[in-house]
Length: 429
Image (cartoon, rainbow, N blue to C red; front, side):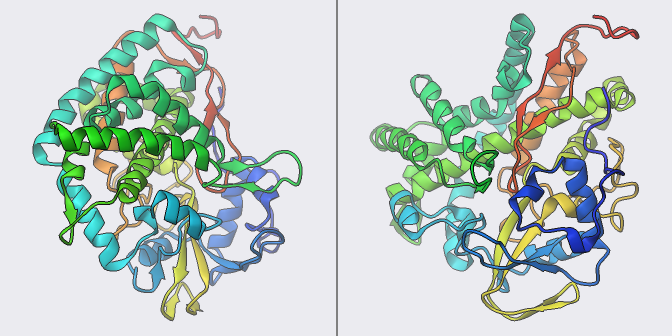
């Protein structure tokens, strides 16, 4: 198996030919997109792109690590409202489903984030860490017994979903239905291959989100009557500025946690399996002393794969950044996928190196008030699962490169072919 996602040396475009607003760009093989980002990083200032269809709202692309990080830490100038995805969520959708925390700024965001953070008490997190190890062992047992041909259909791929459900306190009888709605909601993220080849973006799975929120609303009512030691109980009894959280606030948070938290970590794990197969020397090093290399290996997997490709910001105040002056109302995109390959920050950025140190990747955001709330949990999940996969005689490995969903939003894996057991030098099992 060849190493995936190395920068292409074939059809490398000149900067003048690169159009991030063209849906066809996001259907290019990932190595070619990474090459395009590298060309854009060489320019003196962020480039402005104008979509030919849809809203036709121009945007500037921040591609350098320094610029993405700076914009993330200047929320007064680069605002998350009215929305971080493309297109921005409709007002009616916010009214019906609630506004996601990722689309908020200032006191509104800080108050909600503070309330949610308090729900994840040290006691709950300590219990979650123990549970994560148990869940990882069980799911790898099931995967080894079933020997599925696709990692994305394996019990191991359910790790983030099972952990979040346990932590939140979602009863087992609801999990299959919620998992189905998550799959339906996340299905509409990517680039459409047929018809007008227009972008398929977050927000199209609204019916699935509605069904999921109805289930969560019912659980919330149960917890108000009969609280338990879980996150849902903590949230339904919490308040923001003295006011109880509304059903829409709760629903929006559940959607964010279940869709974003599950999908991004599941994709990172799948990419990790592929990368450790494509780089047997790195896998051997990790297996030789898992406790020594686990933390840096997880960070390198997240840097190299970058599960979230970009988020959008709206300029709220005149700001100079990266050689350009941005004016209020303008749009910018923060390209984490480019920032994490910036050669001015990462030595040999296209190499997969689990010993990389320091590794200031932006896989969880660039810092600031919107830094990923679940970063610690995601790291724990990945470490626990890879410990079980690599330190036991499961012999799991990829037998082909991951099939990716064409997307301008996330680096999502549609399928990853698997084999089990020891791989012989001639390729026979």
